[in-house]
Length: 114
Length: 115
Image (cartoon, rainbow over all chains, first blue to last red; front, side, top):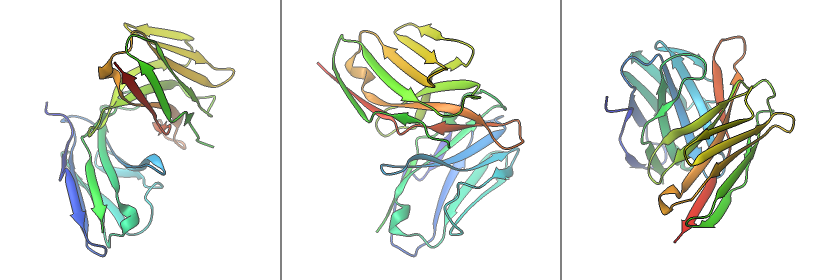
């Protein structure tokens, strides 16, 4: 398997624009996670899905952020409108099952909002 | 709270041992983990320890767990320049009434290994 795939790897956009980040989890994994990493706040869990259903979105910063998982092989994280404080690296991760199972991280999308 | 704390930076010479420390908050954590992040990449699981263990050794890596003090450490023997990376401690905590144990990550310790 190619691992967790994220696109784009880098995104530069202007404040107010809509940004869509994409993720393809590892085939067969039941869980998908979206994280955000910044120097100030470290690694934050934004939302996770189980079998395509959002389970907990309490980490989503505000209504400007939304995430979907229309099928088992694709998820999006959308920011509309984007703001400079959204600049961060966004990671998608997937895992096979509940409990301890290892989370496999994608390479991340580095988002810069000017 | 869900705070996992680590020192931010550690510098060692090649061949020395590195010890990265972490304190966590949830005494009911079933597993504790060490993840490694290399530049420009996502996190990768390095090792983990089950909460009923005190120590786990895996080649150059030794994990020590002190449940009383909620202290976790990662020792890397014979540290190499290729070990330079950010190391994250993480604890699993039970998420509400689900069976899922979400991970709470520390801030990460940047390890710099000089020749």
